[in-house]
Image (tube, rainbow, N blue to C red; front, top):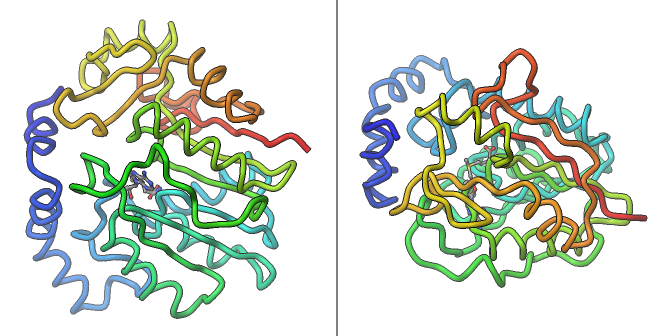
Length: 280
Ligand SMILES: C[S@@+](CC[C@H](N)C(=O)[O-])C[C@H]1O[C@@H](n2cnc3c(N)ncnc32)[C@H](O)[C@@H]1O
């Protein structure tokens, strides 16, 4: 693993947040004071969910949700691991007054920013902070392996998880998939991204030392031994049969990403995308 990433992961989560805040402070001050940052874009130092163009990435995710998961303006959407609103922001321009959005996340600062910037203008967009453990994003909290989503059965048409299962361990993923099966309406879909470990990924990965999963744990693999949630890849058969089908869901589509070294122009995204459905 490249040294900078390894060094970054070696910091406790609170220090990582602080390091990002300080690094971007001059840019954030400039963009804030000059009015170059719109009210629906968080300061760069708060975007703890990944690098790149926040608005363009969100817009691409919205398009993928429409194209692949059949999202429609009147749908009820659940965004698990809603982060700092990367998907919610573009959805404010897509969902109509019949549609609604719920997001939850384990990082409080992201949830609070979303409430202030989004819910205050779009009351059908709601965000919930849940105190669950994740060694990449925070310290302490309950276990995601037995967490019950705070929503009734069959409450959503579409559930989305972008870059969330890539930071969760098997017991947690199994529970979340069961919960998704519970809260989806019959015929509803789940759009989720993963790192899927199969023969092709293993072969390509050997030539791609910059992004790989050297720690073999049987059905899953870790990128970092110390920070287990840093990035997690799942063996494809186990993911499909034990985790997804075990939760009563069906894989409708698989779009493999370019993370392992596949040609970028042939892929939809960096991570692997699975579209799952709940039987009618
Ligand atoms: C890479 S970020 C992606 C955020 C958002 N989905 C996006 O695409 O912008 C991963 C997110 O998953 C959240 N997360 C990690 N474990 C979680 C859990 N058990 N339940 C809900 N969210 C979780 C993190 O706090 C973080 O916001």
